[in-house]
Image (cartoon, rainbow, N blue to C red):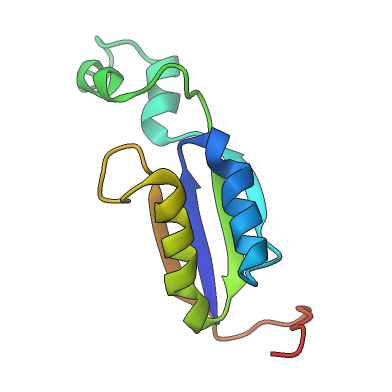
Length: 117
């Protein structure tokens, strides 16, 4: 099993991703509202305090104040499908602003109903 994370910048795509997850047997995801470090710092400091903020501001999309963090416990074999769903919805993850995905192995879990798997 794996702990799967996706940092979603394009929050308007959240429903589509979750629906596709459900249709493909990926269930039990949790979604949190999130904000990246650069965005937080740019709100709290000006360019005199942190000179690199000027260049960071150019990278930030002002219409996207917040993002989402989706995480779920998945089976190892579901990892590729989860990434395929995400890239089908938001585009290639190697392209700027399409988000970040990563997973970690789980060595112990209790309390999950496994629906026959």
